[in-house]
Image (cartoon, rainbow, N blue to C red):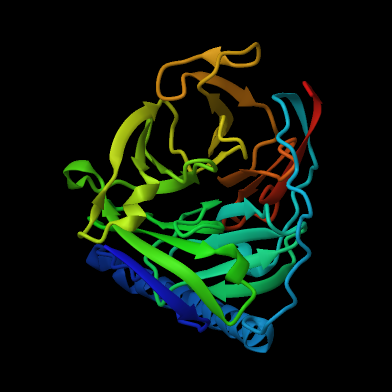
Length: 351
């Protein structure tokens, strides 16, 4: 099902999961007291956090801001980089990005990053500068289940779009997944030009998917499952947006032998694909060269990009010059460092 609509900015609340415990009778009173105390502390923290966040948003979250400065000329595609240098320590962004799961560096506006945060948060695109300072928030849907990935590519109707994959499924219970396409040129107006597609995987497989990469030339949408030891690759062709005959079915196109892939991003010429998981960042290509080694799977040539590792790596993207990349981590409970936004520059390579 494809739905095209104009959406107006708004707000919504999240949810809080519940946990039930069964314990022996002798320790029940003690544990009950601890559970009650912990629950009250947690609720107090949650209420305080929500109050602060919503109070902050009430003032400026959905107010209009001036359209950012546009690129006059799109940066040229860089050649393959041979060595990278990261800006350590990572930038720690605003509190709204503690659970960031997708990132895109705008190819339309200068020095602009877009983010999405996953389940339990509002369905909004967060706009920041390169230091993670919040500039704007845009509501893109009435509700969401578990938005896990953000990409960019040609709109189904022309122009340039952001794509959000509401495809997270940690417990493998969702039979239907959703992709949103949002026209980037309408982000800083009162209404969005957007489309929504519902789809499923072959044989109605219920897969957890946290990575989406829209091909910059064809507009085809590639999805990567998050599984131990391998990642299945699926494709939804760009022409699927023109159909209105019920659910679309993604086509299986290959696999990667990586654990738990959490994001992917094409270079602007569509020849190189970045992948990130909790172990590292990898670049895949279909063309043999001196930098990539032949491996099994789809896009058969691979190299590992050696950069400092964050505590729970979630998102990756090329920056517009294609000679730098950006990657992120969620904040882990009880850990104050090793998370945030990392930028890495090419310090040795061709071109």
